[in-house]
Image 1 (cartoon, rainbow, N blue to C red):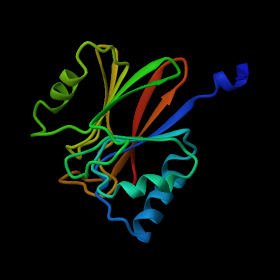
Image 2 (cartoon, helix red, strand yellow; image 1 turned 120 degrees about the vertical axis):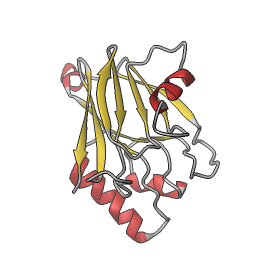
Image 3 (cartoon, helix red, strand yellow; image 1 turned 120 degrees about the horizontal axis):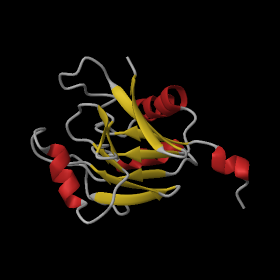
Length: 172
């Protein structure tokens, strides 16, 4: 049973996307370091696709991980193309995305039509985005490994308390 103190604690979600990592000891160490030093403490991890090696989802230990398949990921049981989560009464849509950056958010939002989202998390563009549009938090963490023209690598953080809010964390 949760105590009042537990319910007042902010629930922290680390958000990654487009990591494009091979299954190696170096990749494992990188992801563990990222979570322990850039995002810690987190209660959950979301990965918005293009992990590349699904075995890397196990490096986060006991921390619950929710991931979706990106265009560079193999089909993997338990890793759908899109996912809808509920965290402390807030609805979070998770999807990688596809196609050109122009219109990407709207294409993904169309995939969740008929669902009231409090937050949309996506990837694909490698461009960090954190904004509120029509009362919905929209977050793309960018990429911790592949800037694709951005001046920095980044991850995202979602904090769920009485409201849901997000931020982009520059890691270099």
